[in-house]
Image 1 (cartoon, rainbow, N blue to C red):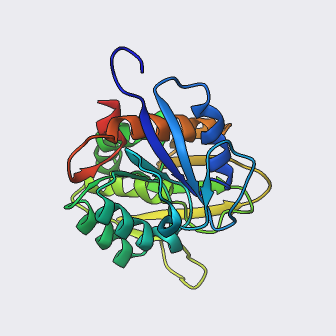
Image 2: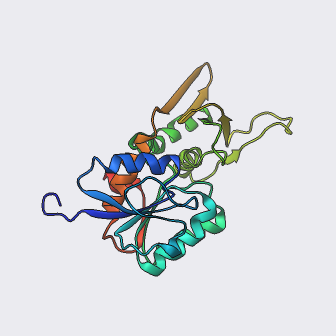
Image 3: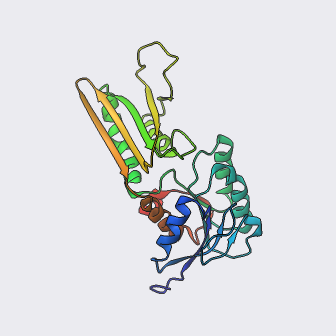
Amino acid sequence: MKGGIAMTKMIMHGCNGRMGHVIADLVKEDADIEIVAGVDAYGESSYAFPVFKSLGECNVSADVIVDFSNASAADGLLDYCAEKNIPVVLCSTGLSEKQLEKVRETSEKVAVLKSANMSVGINALLKVLKEVSPLFAAAGFDIEIVEKHHNQKLDAPSGTAIALADSINESMNNEYEYVYDRSSRREKRPEKEIGISAVRGGTIVGDHDVIFAGHDEVVTLSHRAYSRAIFGKGAIEAAKFLAGKGPGMYDMADVLA
């Protein structure tokens, strides 16, 4: 307990993954939160907290669940959170439209914080894009997004790249079309499209470039992630924020407000 506020108890969903290990290490240094249980299909680990192979086996009470697993586990997680009335920080990407609808439905029963990227920098960039994109578009600039990630990432393009595109598009009445592949097309670039390209290789943590290409000039807004710790820190702050919150859909902008 710090400053009279009870310590937040969290369940780490996907605890044996890369981000699960990062968050577990960060929580050790945070006096305001503790991991009381982990859930991972691979089961046991060397953690001090108990690890269960499924949420159905988990018999430990908590204030919040932080999820860094994968899209295939999202439906069961959302059902569990709604049934147990446990808020969830949903960080897995690659969710289908049907799953995203389930996220919205679940948020009517319990607090859900969903973000494609938990870093402060990316969320600040999302705000900046809403302000500057209409200015560049009005001046005739084309818009492209290039994202780069490690060779183990399963989904493409990244959830963050889509979130960046959405932020741009929302600022311009959703008039732009997303284009992921031009290999079969033989025509000049339409004015109102956002090209999104994905690079996969090595151990790249996460690079995102938003390119505004005009006549004889180019402006690029970039974000580079040098460590997964930035995502872990954001997820931990989100967990502390969400604990005790009522039903609703939240995002990192609420945490940073």
